[in-house]
Each structure stands twice: as structure tokens, then as C-alpha cells.
Length: 227
Image (cartoon, rainbow, N blue to C red):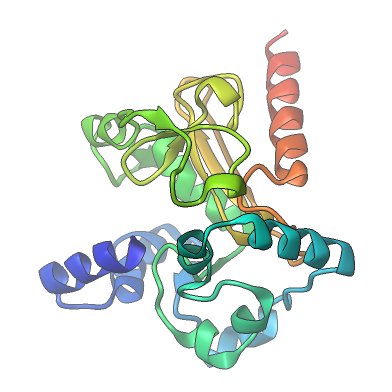
């Protein structure tokens, strides 16, 4: 529902979500992330690709899903064919077509991991961060169905790690997966923020094995560092 929240931002601030993000957060903090990529920046993009194995697995997954679930994933289209077009790159589609580096994604989640503050800049109150990760319940998504292998614990705009440990061992760590395998997470208790982006798109909707391996490695390193 990023486009719905984006319209609230536009009506309150008078500017589009991408410009608001640049003015209030990414610009002042020097975070390399945007909605609506300027044409002069397109040379920095890595084109999205998907190998035959993942395309076959994705087609099989879509074939098992109900029409409403397929529609929810393909409207707006988020696959490589759409995402590699100039129109998609230039559009502002909050929660669907953010462009940035892994470091940028980690920095944005770092605001949450820092309980609203990063690099000496206060962006959110501590109370707001706690509100963001307030559980709204755990369930199997009735729309996506087979696209999710397990129940998901939902917070306000993000998912919680919960019993599935989707974002590490802390059940109150929060994050979100992106199309093709990307993800970001924040764990205020551990002081961990993570961003992962890729250009080879996987076949699933969430819990891409590359993401799972990376999260496990980060928490293993964190435990080892603490002795």
C-alpha cells in the first residue's frame, strides 16, 4: 500500500514522495536511495536478470496461486521486464520501485536500529520506532497463500522476525523483503541494520535463500564479536 501512504505524504507536504524523502531524510543524511531515478543516474544501474531455473520455479508458483494473489503481485508489475524500462525507473512507486545501494538500504534501516537516530541525526522518536514494530498479529497471508511458506507476523508497514526468525533470532527485529530477493532489517536490541540488494532475481516472494544465509552470517559474526 505504498502508493496510498505516498498520497498522504503528497497531500500533507505538497511534494511527491521521492522529493519528500530527499528533502527530509536521504538528502541531509547522504543516503543513496530514491523513488524516481533521474535519467542522469541510470548509468549506475545494474540491469535485473533471471535465469531459466528461477523463471521456471516462479511460473510454477504463480500457477498454484489464486487469481487475486497473482494480481496482487503483478499490479504494479515488479518483474525484470518492467523494472528495466525507462518508465519504471523514472516513476515514483513507493514500496515497489526504490532504487539504491545495499549500504543505503542498511542506512535507512539503521534509523530504526538506532531507535530513531543515526549519525547524530534524530529522524523518529523512540516511541515512533516502537509503534512501527508493534505486532498486529501473525497469520498466513490469505491473499498470497502459497507464495509464503509460513505465517508472517505483521507490524505497521514492516514484518517482524517472529517465530520464523525471518530477520534473525530476535523475534522483535523488523524488516521487509523485496521482489527477487532483496531485503532490509533492523534489530534495535542488537544494534544491527542490514541491507541486501541484487540484480539476479530469485523465484520467491520472501525468504530468498541468499538473504537467509546473509542474515545467519551477520548474527553469527555478531555473536562471535561479543564472545
